[in-house]
Amino acid sequence: MRNNYILIDYENVQPKSLSLLNAHVFKLLVFVGANQTKIPFEMAVEIQQLGNKAEYVKIGGSGPNALDFHIAFYLGELVQKDPSGYFHIVSKDTGFDPLIKHLKEKKIFAQRKEELNDIQILNVSSSTTMDEKISAVVQRLASCANKTTQNACINKYN
Image (cartoon, rainbow, N blue to C red):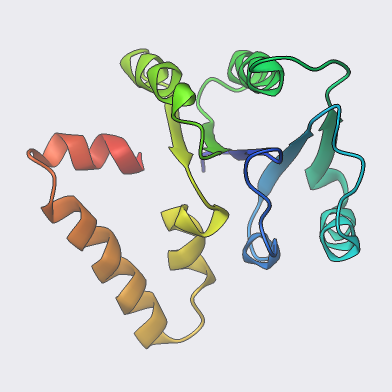
C-alpha cells in the first residue's frame, strides 16, 4: 500500500476540520507562515490527536512565496525518502501546478487540491454507509468522464 502525505499551505487554506484523516494512515505537514501567530484551538487539538502522524512546519522568514518554497523543499525531501508515496498539496495557489506536472512526468504521484475534502481517497474510504461509498465512487467516475482520455483520469488518481 502506498504511503500518503498531505502538505497544507496554512497561509492559504485553513481547513475547518481534520476529521476526514482520523480513519486513514497519512503523514500530515501543516506549513504555517512567519506572520501567522495563531491557530484556532479546535484545529490545534485535532492536529495533536493525530500524534506522530502530524507536525507543524513554522516558516522562519517572510517574503513572496516563502512558504511555497518551503513546501517544495519538504516535498522534495519526502519524495527522496519515499519515491513511491502519494503527495497531496492542499493550497489554492496554482503556482504549485507546474511542479505537480513535473512530478507526474517523473512518475511521482502528486496532486494539488484547494480543500482537504477534495482529496478523493478521503471521501471514498471515509464513507460509512454503502450509499455514501457508492456516491463517492460515482463522483470519482463522473469526474473521469469529463477527461479527454482514460489515461488522464488514471494519472490523476494514481
